[in-house]
Image (cartoon, rainbow, N blue to C red):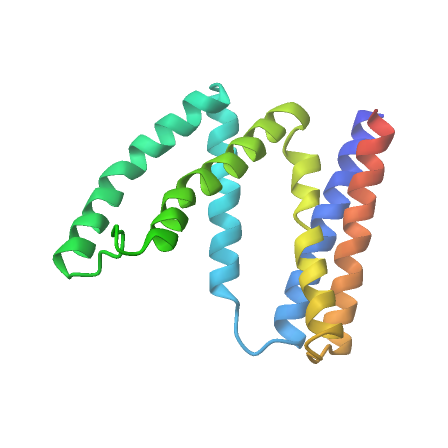
Length: 172
């Protein structure tokens, strides 16, 4: 049973890889480096978070402490160049800038906690919903072009997602 389960997961992963390579070779003119780097960095972040195995709040504190020196350097240059808009003369902007912290930390905390509760597999599958909704918005609302090659790639990826989700469902 476990070997069959692993094979279904491997099949879904290979289908996604095939679909991406198909799209790169037959449809797009350039490799989407930004998207690839974002995907790799997010995957590495999740891998490190999983391997460290600390409570969610402590992990976010440690991450924030790692980012703190970079943030201080950026704030220094913002103030030095006169681009500091965090000013009492503009209360609405000051409120929005103040809320930027919680609006970033709360979803990240909930995401990391959700990964702890249900694992990386199911949460990774959720990330296919956003690009699909973006595609639907682009195609139906903004009238973006959608070639046959992109359609084939899209279908293959969703077949892989269904195989993976079906395998997860059968395990439970």
